[in-house]
Structures are given as structure tokens and as C-alpha cells.
Image (cartoon, rainbow, N blue to C red; front, side, top):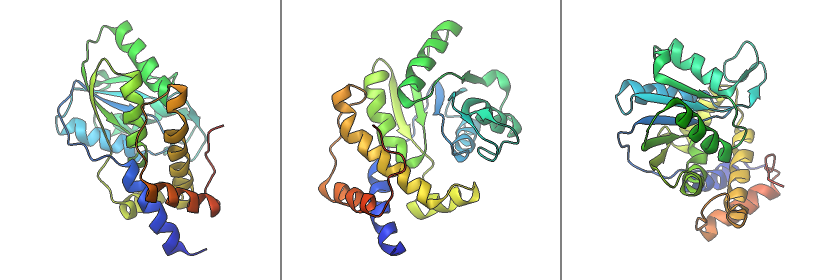
Length: 222
């Protein structure tokens, strides 16, 4: 397999997925759970820079030993909580949702917890992996429409993000398969009402098809 060609197509998907919205101060940094601990690292960085007074970690998926820097299996939210506490974020500044198992539930479960705890947040920084920024934004337009939000990730280039993932034992193959899966969801989920339709440029869709032909289809929706 021509790795240069793989990277060419993958970078097209990466750049499309990664909306570049400017940072804005918010009530909370809302971190949608995943297998990538660098998302929690960036949440800590933003918190310490004063972009928000609270961090929300949402994610009930339990990751196995070796993922998210865990010695024992933990939910995404709990693992991210540990990362933030170790980095000096006070526990009282962290809100946890350990129930959500998908992006839609990240929003619905978090809304429920905020209501139960009496938080009247209106402005959010939605934080995810770079290649999930667009789908997070499109989902929030449906699931979080009553709030103000931006959708962001740590401003890594494709090469920087692949290198960062390698440091966390996340393979390039896994990242690319996740990216094709996310593009497929952007294509088919609007008709299910899960998210707002996003225009997909022809060259991005062609890159997706080439990557599928190369076998990067490990995370496709049914």
C-alpha cells in the first residue's frame, strides 16, 4: 500500500472534519468522551487559560486496560477526570456524565445532569478529537440547539495529530478508519434526524471512497 497516497486522502478527510472555529469564553468546556486522552489534556489547558470555569466530561463507554492511560478499565468520563485531577484541576470544577454511549447521548445525558444539578449554562466549548469536530457541531445543531456553542479540538495538523496518537498507542490505521466512519455518518445521519446535513465536497467524498477501497472501514455505522 502506498503510504503517501493513504496520507494524501486521509489528510483531505481530516481537514474537512476539522472545522476551525475561533475560541470563545464559555460557561463550560464540554468534553465528549473518546479513546483519545489528549482531548482531556487540551481541556485542562483551556481551563487553566481561563476559557471556562467548569469542565464537563461525558462518556460512559468503559475502555479496556491500556487505553486512556488506565491501569484498570474505566469509563471515558472517569478516565478523563483522573487526567484532569492529576493535572491540577479542582474536583469541584468538574461535572461527570458516566452514562452516554454515543454522541447524541453525550448531549442528552449532559443536559439532564446540568438540570438536576441546577446549572444554568448557556455557552459551551464543545471539545473533541480533530476529526470529530464537524460531526459534533452538526449533532449539536440538533441536540443542543437551545444553547450557544463552538466545536473545536487541539489545533494539530494531520501529521501532528497522527504523531500525538502514536504517543498514546493509537494507530494511524485506527484514526483513518474512524475518519471514514465519521464521514459516512455525516452522509447518512441527517435523514435519521441525528444531525444537520453538511455539504461534503466532491474531492473529500472521492478520498473517502479511495480509503474504503484500501480497507479503512473499521468503524462504519449500520
